Amino acid sequence: MTSSGFSRMRRHALGLGLALAAGAAFAQDNPIRILVGFAPGGVTDLVARVLAQGMQAELGRTVVVDNRPGAGGQIAAQALKVARPDGNTLYLTNSHTTAMVPLTTLQPGYDATRDFVYVGLVATNPNFFMVNPALVGPGVDSVKAFADWARAHPGRGNIGVPAPASAPEFSVSVLGQAYQADFKAAAYRGDAPLVQDLIGGQIPAGIAGIAAALPHVRAGKLKLLAVDGPQRLPGFDVPTYSELGLKGLEDVITIGLIAPAGTPADLVAKFNAAANKVVASKTFHDRIVDTGILVKSGTPDDMLRTTEASRAASERLVKAAGFKPQ
Image 1 (tube, one colour):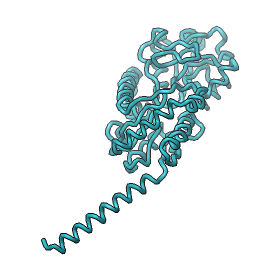
Image 2 (tube, rainbow, N blue to C red):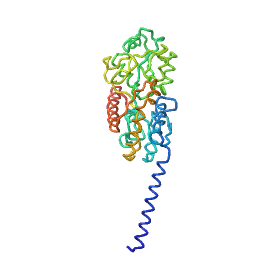
Image 3 (cartoon, rainbow, N blue to C red):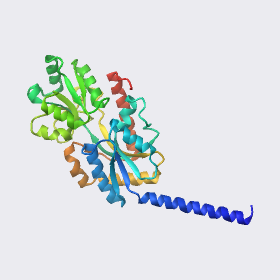
Image 4 (cartoon, rainbow, N blue to C red):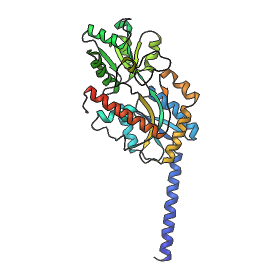
């Protein structure tokens, strides 16, 4: 190769390196988007907005929430899959999207184990079994008592759930088998419409997060009978399903950040550190305390292990309910 040819190659390489560096710098100047798979106003959206505000302060970059609602979080997950792994796109997902949907949907449009990297946990979101005491009577103070009520009122053992093919829906099947009661799941599009029908008397019972129900619980219009997860929720004297002798309902929905596969490890570590600091703050706790959500943080590996455990628990639940992927 001639000296002039070598010089041209050096200039080309130098120019390419400068262009790549400029592109990386430009990418870091762009706002960070936190995708949310649900509509504005819900619990996950609230958590995302409080988290975004805190992370913006920690990272010194603009952080915005980008709602992509629909299909149990699949639309947002598909958007994350095709996003560039440049640190500009994250997804505040829940374990329904990463652990349950791949088991119940033949073509979810993503592979939760291959297409994403885990950034860190943010919270857990327990679901409560609740009834309308004006409809079922004040004596229905346990899940067993509701099963007795349902047997005494054939065809009325409908239990609202916030989404089809979800852990709450499959829980209805497990509970019906355990109590030998004719329970039927009535699927809604979120907790809010479920709770509205519950207090309106269209359904006698429901399984949902506490945020939408809490004002009505405090007013005595709804009664909490059980909660999923491994332990009671602080501030609520409500037994877990395990305490009631029911197995297979110990898992609880988790909420956490994920990023596109290929996101550099140093960026993942930076986002994890920022999120953990925000989640540990009094501001974060005070903003979400009335949602019934429990603050939870950890490493990316902690989130991966938690998601894998949820996937195993979901697989057992789906199998017990006899559900076939669609």
